[in-house]
Length: 376
Image (cartoon, rainbow, N blue to C red; front, top):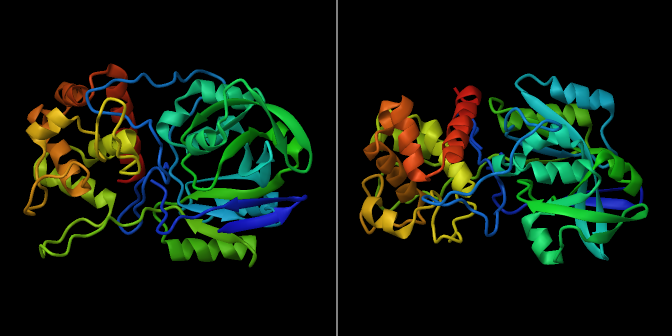
């Protein structure tokens, strides 16, 4: 657990055993792979064959791209502007952002809250949340927003007002819930509300540095932020490796996407599989079933799985829709049968066949392009 105290409040970023951020989230270069999204998204996974229109992105807080965090930093006394600037200048750091935070209460129940600039923080969350204009409009307008799980736990109702108690207490309207992609962060408020509640100024930061080893990154952050700084890696945990077959299997989702594309659909960019995996399930963090009945890390409908599901990487036994070693190769096989390896309009049609919606194709191909730009 990462914790700090200050201004009469305390912030705690809870870490799960083996925690990694998929957040998105996502992947890094070899030796530094990660998920895009670190925590489950209950009841809201996408599903192959079922179209759900995402939120519209408009002016006033649009995001240019998803930034995939590698390291969460918590500084009990807060970070100075000079320290924040130096963190951003570490060699290999592509993006960084600092924000306020504290442990507060909502209706008397303890939660971890952070105070952010909606326009800049938006790029650090999963793509579906970043695309939800209503979520960010509510935050910009002074409402508080939350992660899905805490909204369900506290039974928060959009439009209702709640007592938020930090250094002071304020009645604040609840906006919306969505997947936040940061383990242990329950609520978001904007900077004006952050100051009003007395959250610790610049108590935490996120760093995106996909090409830097975690050991080196931690060492450099510690040198800048001081010995009291707490850090949590947000890179992905390795996939469980099946050792009984004697076959060398991919050990990260990044490797799995690359190997699956190469073996089961030569010519298909692994970034397309990565984008589908992130959008559909957060790389296995939400395997369903969805409201339409889709299952597994690549969200197959049962009938589609019955036709296209295979046992991947030469292993014996029945195909398992919940097993990423089966699901990702099966998705590559399905896309390939629909012509994805040919690229261009053929790829567009193949992705459309995976989920029949033009917005879905644009989302997949847009996110695939971001992967390609970040992870050559």
